[in-house]
Length: 273
Image 1 (tube, helix red, strand yellow):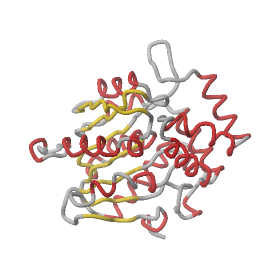
Image 2 (cartoon, helix red, strand yellow):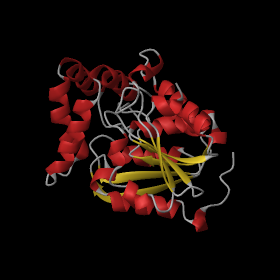
Image 3 (cartoon, helix red, strand yellow):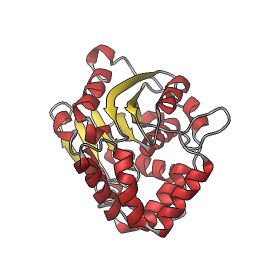
Image 4 (cartoon, one colour):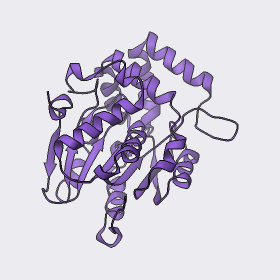
C-alpha cells in the first residue's frame, strides 16, 4: 500500500503553484483545514492527509511501536513526500504537527522549502527555566483521564483547546473530531506529544520558518511561541489577534493572511539547505 493510500491523501488547487502540505494536530484529521482550504486553493497546490490512527487513514497505518514517538509520524511524512515527488514543499504544521514538520526539515531538508508552524510547542512541561504551559502532574492527570474516559475527556477538553466560548460551534466541531478518532491511537499520539522534549531539535532546522501564535492559547502560551522563534534560525513571528489553539477554525482569514505574507514573492528568496 502506498503512503497516499495509507494516509488518505488529497491533492487540491493550482498545479504548478507553491505546494503547501497541511499537517493536522492531535485528535484531528484533514477536515480541520476546511475553513482555510477555500482561501488558499486558488493560489497554491494543497496536500491534505491524515496521520496514522486519524481520520480516514488506513487502519493498518498505525503501529504502536513506530508511533510511540513523534519521529514515527515524521517518518510517515517523509515517505509521503517521497511518494508524491512534488519537489521541496511548504510544510504547514498545527500544534504537535509543528514539531513533526520540524523533525522532517531537520532530517530531510531536501524535501522542504520552508515551514509554517501554527501554535508550536517543543515541550509542554514546565522546567525551572522554561515555560511550557503545564506541570508534570497536570500532564500525568491529562493522560490518565484520556485513558480512563476518552469520551468525557474529549467533551471537556475540546472547548478549552479551541477557546472562543461565545462560538460554541467551534468547540463542538473539535469535540466531534476527538470522539471519532480511534481512542487507542489517540492515547499513543497524546503520550508522544505531551511527554516529548524537542527543544534541541530547533537548532537543527535551517529552513525559513513562520511561527504563528494566537494572543491567548491554553495549550501553547505566548511564551512558548516566543521561545520557538528565539531558538529557530531564519524564523519570523506573527501574533494573531485571535483566541484559542486552532486559528484555522477561529481565525482562518487572519491565518491565511499570515501565510500569504510569508510566501509573498517579495520574501521568496532561495530557501537554502
